[in-house]
Image (cartoon, rainbow, N blue to C red; front, top):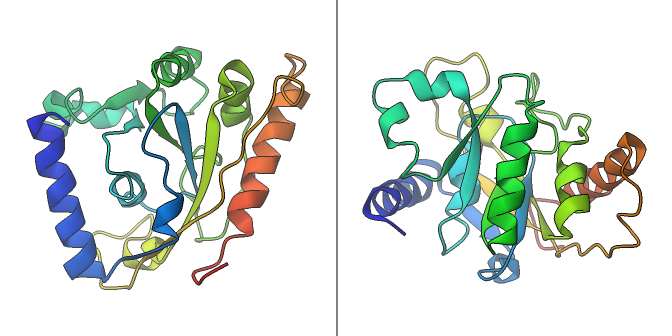
Length: 206
C-alpha cells in the first residue's frame, strides 16, 4: 500500500468499527494473493471502502469520472487505486483497465448491478462483470453488505448510525468452458451466477 491508500484505509477501518460497529462474517474467506474480483452489492457511497477494508492488500475501485472532479478526491484518486468510468457504467476502456489489473494479479472491487440501488434491495446484474470474468477467468469472491443503505441511502445528506455487516461468500471459479462464447448472453449468464451467490448470503454464519 502507498501512504495515501494506507491513511484512508486506516481511517475507513476506524470509522467502520467505531462509527458503524461493522462486523465481517467469514473473514477467513478473503483471498489476499492473485487476481480476484470482489463482487459486491451496491446501495451506498460507503460500499467501496467497506469492501476494500475487508482485504489486507490494496485493491482497485471503479468510480464515475465526474467524482474525480471533486477538489479533494480527484487529485488523490490515482493513489487510492481509482479507475475512472463513465457515468452509465458502459465504459469498455474502464473494463479493459480492470482486466489489465486482474492479469497483473491484483484485486478489483466490482458491483454487478453497476449503480447504487434506489431502495436498498438487490438489483439486476449487468453484463460488465461477466465480460471481465470471461476475459480473465479470475476468481470471484461474492460479498454482501447489510446496513449501508440505512446508514447512508442514495439521497441522504448525512449518514446516520446503523450497524453494518459484510458477509463474504465462498469463492467462485470459472473455467474456460464456463466462459465459452463472446456474446452478451454468455456475459449475462456469468453475471447472473455471481449475483445469485451474492443474493444467497445472509448477515449471519452460512
